[in-house]
Length: 228
Image 1 (cartoon, helix red, strand yellow):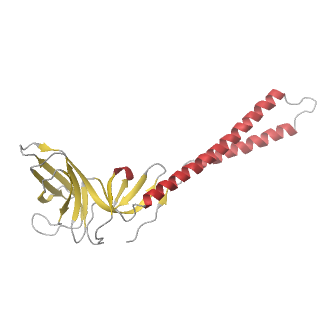
Image 2 (tube, rainbow, N blue to C red; image 1 turned 45 degrees about the vertical axis):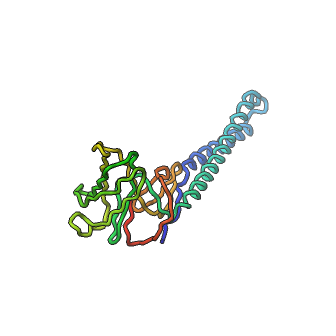
Image 3 (cartoon, rainbow, N blue to C red; image 1 turned 135 degrees about the horizontal axis):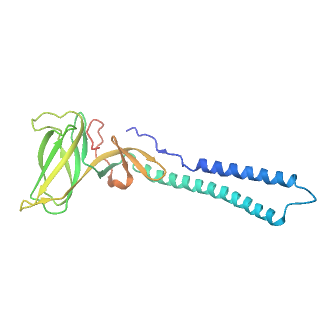
């Protein structure tokens, strides 16, 4: 499997560091010029000179502090990316209501029911919200993986593409139960925007905080559909 490189967005503070450094250089030139051209018979007041030296030290400290902060941000980004790189090639489960069907094979999604259901009905819709397939999933409490064989209610193979999943579960009294759905896919790239780590899963960009499970793919197949 070919994976995209791990990428990193540059930290946004580089321009600020350059600006502060420029102010520092200008202040230094101004101070030395002032000292070189002052009247020897009427030198600068010592209080004024001390105040300017304090300002000089403050600007220098700001430059050094900003440089250290840039280095710290860069280090944190690299640490974050190193952590994210461990997801490359792994199969993950994340929040979602869609799945992607390939030209051959099946696709799947996950669902979680907090109470024991008596019936679980799955509807598969295309991008025009037309019903393509309906089938019953196992009536299990907790989390389970639901597989769609890729065939519609007419028995024909559905075209490759992205499909929406709707799940309705009821208990023995016919009362609707809350169902949480997710999608499954393989991580192909990792990217940091300086604040959040994102994983490329199929055709979707997912924040790492939305990942619910990670596992090694049982039998990778490039032609087989994966959820996205």
